[in-house]
Amino acid sequence: METNAERTAQVMNEDIFSRETLLVGAEVMTAIAAKKVIIFGVGGVGSWCAESLVRSGIKHLTIVDSDVVCITNVNRQLMATTKTIGRAKVDVLKDRLLDINPLAQINAIQGIYSEETSATFNLSSYDCIIDAIDSLKDKENLILEATKTDAILYSSMGAALKMDATKIQVAEFWKVKGCPLAKALRQKFKKSKDFPSKKFKCVYSEELLENKGTDTFHETSTPLAENDWHTKKVHTNGTIAHTTAIFGFMLAGLVIQDIVQKEIQ
Picture 1 (cartoon, rainbow, N blue to C red):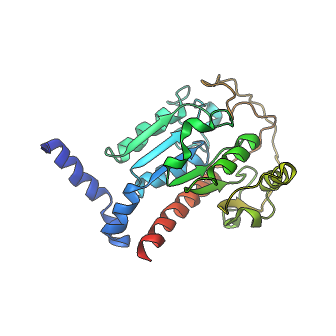
Picture 2 (cartoon, rainbow, N blue to C red):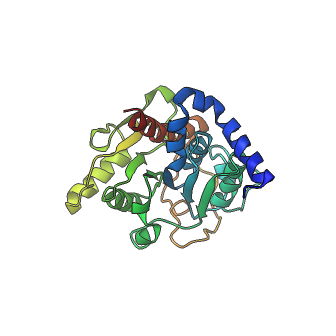
Picture 3 (tube, rainbow, N blue to C red):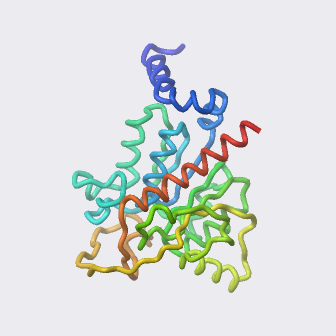
């Protein structure tokens, strides 16, 4: 039997999404709430994507990242503040997402995606897979494995060294232009002769700026999982909040738009 607390939570949940329900209808909102989504990497892009999805009605969300909040994350990562430094990113973000929707089912995994760990994530159990990884090797493997499933893959290309919001756009992976990360991925696929099994959409920008300043800070936070993809970078590039956030919002927008379009057909 439903308790008063559960009934109150359900009413509150309906109120939270009342404006979106006006826009898309109750049946579509039910479809959105039923989808299972996983995000790999909840840094400058993935954190904004996660919040947008939960605010849009996604209730089943898995977030994966091995890193802890560092002082250099504060300028662009949603859950990073001076009060959350040192905490696991997925834990801080989960708390925030549950503050938005207490009925959401948020699975926070403090770990990494790699060829060795791929099978543990059971990718085929998700409706949507979001790639916000910045490790080339791990990104390559995720794309290959995700496209073998029935899930829809959405991938973020490089968001660093960008400032012009009007240049951020969406294209199918093989049609992405002017992005060094996309170019490097295509070269690896061609060299290995192992290609993605199906097409997928990417968020990217052709803009490519140069660093104007000097990197005076070296991240010293110890990752809580081996081979962390965020703290072991050969080179650090400049980033700014509005561009990484737009990348994340656009990924979330693609997910919601695809669900809506499928339901109204």
